[in-house]
Length: 218
Length: 269
Image 1 (tube, each protein chain N blue to C red):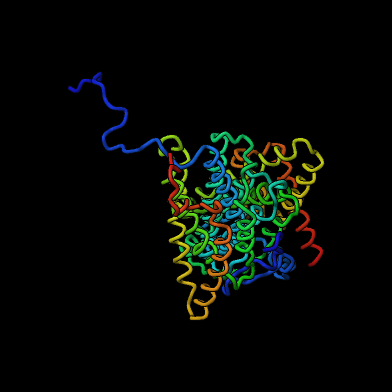
Image 2 (tube, each protein chain N blue to C red):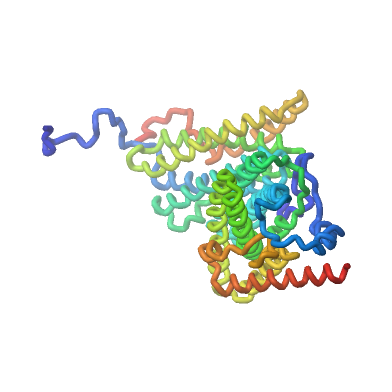
């Protein structure tokens, strides 16, 4: 029988988590506020679009994904007070005016003939950007001190990956002609220009800096 | 994308056939059918037309669920954060997912019952109730009145599944019934929360609900007698937060609607 009183290390040998992280409490809160704002605008857009798409399968997928992003917004809303942000509305804002302009352009298509444009904006531009930003946040923040944010981002990423795959498959089934390919590419390019100007969903530095600065990290 | 999408802009593929509620109400065949004495109007498996009536009703559920999905979706989008609190929008997003599942269930059940999409026409009156400019009116019109009707319809269909020996129908209707009770409760909770300090707004919302309830009791469609195909599900309504007084009031509205319809038939013959 093993001795239950034998001293053991606090971290099992395979648990390689470390304390240091790139984000302060304030920086993590700022990003979480940006994510909440974006998730809100996204679930509202998907909800609004449901009535405007004639394709039944797309309509049902948008209805389902609408809730995924609402749940993400709720997770981020609950995390903000834990990051010392008691007024959760204060940080619930776009990273910058360029990000707000991107979202405005993203949700612009309305006509029933524009399903490709709607889906390209979500699944070929926004979701890949979100996956990148959330992955960066998970990897950059302290795996011990900011673990609750990481855990929520993990759940969110699982949705993002699955939703992206489903949306991309829908798009591939809707793009039937060379003209459709042109439409999709043109729409993607327009929106990429806008999100590039924003610097990503959390503004410049969304994915950190490529430039090495001496003594920058903890 | 604009705020407030009118019903005529609801997007559908080429299989769907749109009709108006007035066309349905003024259909001259209604008067002739009203003259026939066919006994109980309830869905009973032994009656020759039971299968067709059930398929028709299932197609109506299918199109109704699409419009419920669209209405909940528009409520997440049409209002800013001041007009509709964050938590209300989260509830509406959750409802989108639920309604989306209900459409999936209805498509599969329709297929199971031998119905094709577009076999019956679609009227958009459910979505029209979701076009009110005040979110609390929408919640009263859609969640309390129409989702309340859905409780009655699903309970009736569940019983029909039991009586006709169709466990698939009974199983699915029971699951959808669980969701509808949640949606009605959601509407009741938000009505109380958002109008706690505004009795006039609450009365406007309840008036709107009564109007929708009356519309959907039209011609004795829903009630508590043998003449009503859809039976009022008192127990489930109570579970969803309706008081006994509210259920009694609805029963009166339904009974009055039936008397109005009988008078209309008598007047036209």
